[in-house]
Image (tube, rainbow, N blue to C red; front, side, top):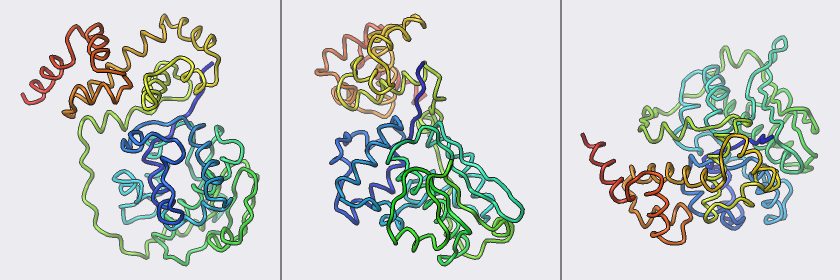
Length: 337
């Protein structure tokens, strides 16, 4: 059974900003392809994300690096979508926007509120988080939740309590940032807030932010988050992710979904698919997205992992009946009409 969650590259942007500023580290130093980082809506297997968080600890030599980046870990630094989350003048609405809208940035996780008397617990639950990476992931989300609260209540606002999952990270800077009791090894990340701040907490004027204008292509990207066990959509995104590392291979894809190559082949066969046929179909679909943006055919061939443009031309014509140049010409003609 394939069961895998994804997170968008955009969610790495605040982390990338903070690492460059405080440690002089670029995410490409983790072996992350530069092109992947240039495409904020691209999807990353959550296990790779956790692995990168652990690698950052090794590079910085600082188990508490995440709290040192707290000033940069904000939804605003995610980009236009992150700005939308916190652009409303009402904290309760921002709370709801984030809980619902985060599904565009991360799959397989739950963001929600739990009320207990006069306390509301802002909860992040992720069954895909594990190991030391889970601690960094939990701490990052708790920082984001706290930053949102302070956005509306002022920089001195202190949560009632913070619960974090994963092994404990010991550093006085964590206590200093939150300013409240903190427990580790919890079942979920929870930031406890006074319920009253959702009802009355709008003390800080917010900057005026222009409405988000989303193109059809951007909307396609924002709505492509697969459910973890939807094999068709998961395979599409795994193969799309693979091409950032070169032409997709069965071994690479199998490793990302946690199966042997034989197990993955059987899974695909049950749906009447082959890995080669599925890869060709998916890469042709991705190619069309680049065609619509006006990317040149040689550049598209490189972006898809082909070793040369001739191989791309042959594969595309087998799938679409036209050469990439012919198909792009027709696409752009239709888009102008």
